[in-house]
Length: 173
Image (cartoon, rainbow, N blue to C red; front, side, top):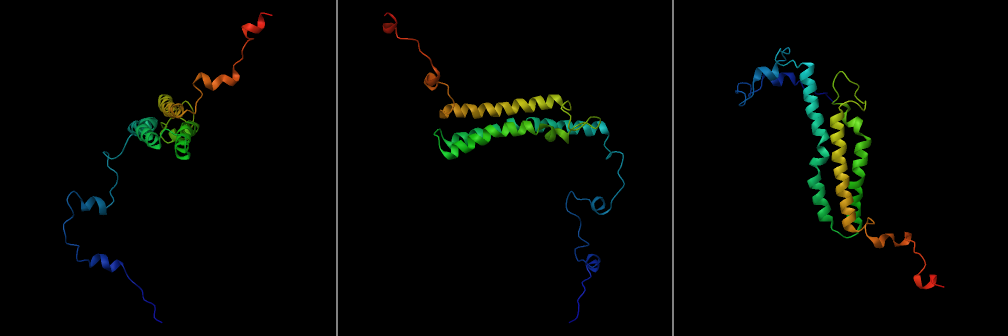
């Protein structure tokens, strides 16, 4: 049995598409030849930190951006106490706690270059907004629990803990 060797390097030079012009907006020189980074392409540390701060703000308000979709899911799950609606509410109530517990890891990649990435004092304003947005999500989940009747908000829910004095008819004698 003879072994066949394919030489792919010859295909590139003999290509019939070689003489076609590059697509619109595509520069052949920039993609095929690696240039040394120019002064314009070099990004200073402060500009890089500004970009990271912008990304950190995106992470900070991400829980608030997802609230409309979560509210729609809560609406579609219905007001009754079924396994589907309980599952959605449980995930909605659990996610803020998981997000807050992993907050330092979420913001570690956006820390300025002169600070410790996982310190709690790194990006404090971003982290406060992140916590507030997660508390807003938790509030929506608790509102849904109340509307489903799962939270004890009425007086009838606390009757087992109510103590009564003696009736006035019995205390006369």
